[in-house]
Image (cartoon, rainbow, N blue to C red; front, side, top):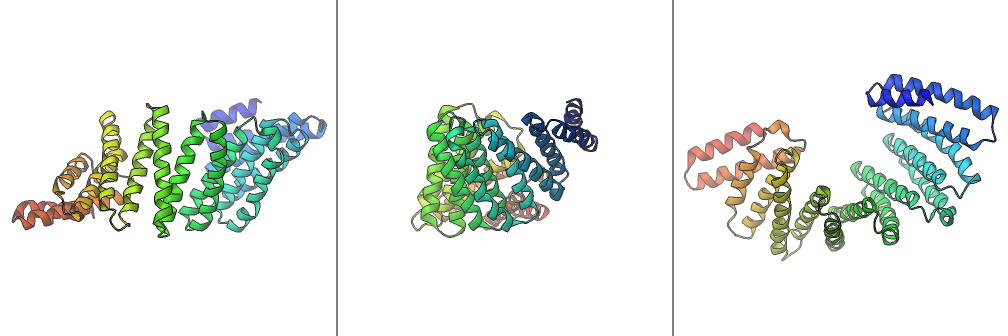
Length: 365
């Protein structure tokens, strides 16, 4: 217990090597205890916990091979205890936690086939004990969260079809979970994010109708979250992302230009509200500037007055320095906005203003 407490303190102080050493020392003691008193399930649970902790340290060090081994050992021990005591939901919960840790470590090593082979077992294990664990939503919540995270990783690594499969699994579990436990705000938020992500996957595949259907549902879910938790800024930020997604989708639909502008207006309104209460959030400021830039493009395509939005975008971007952005897309759009304004000033024969815009755009590029 002392070694475990010391290890946790070392990790908090970002002293990983010392933390790892303390966890390893605790692991040796728990191994002896499980040999001396093999019938005591608590000793086995503590041993599994130490393997998990070592896996977590390896994960922090991005030693994914070692993380996989540690999580797998934790999973194997925890599974034996969970089978002996199926009524104890916390045992099932830890098994799921260890399994998901192992799967994530395998994904980091690009062991995609292994992950796809093992994932059905995770749900089968949960269904096996579902009658015992159903009153405790944490198990289902963790599996849904794990599927969501696996989908995110696969999409980022160029596997959209497999990502969609995991998103659909996460969506199905979260629909059931949030219907039964509507007060689980984290699950409701994740469900909205999963559905939003499904919409974007459909958009990338050129499937605009299901894309729009999913993003519209995400908007409804996020509005409901804001109604239930009006002080939660993340819900509003997420809603702005869904309005942006709606605008992108409608831009691909013939006759959807008016809806695109309306969606951009909603996005700007939400971001303006967030910006009004926190003017120090650099990422938020870039999002707001980018929303005005995109609004200007939508208005230009509709042959409506648009220069004001570009001017406003530049005014917002000028509050920051280019190196403060974490999103390369923002720099590209910032530069493009300046270039567009340069063309506008050039067309008006305001050559000094045009040259200034072009110079700033070149610097950003």
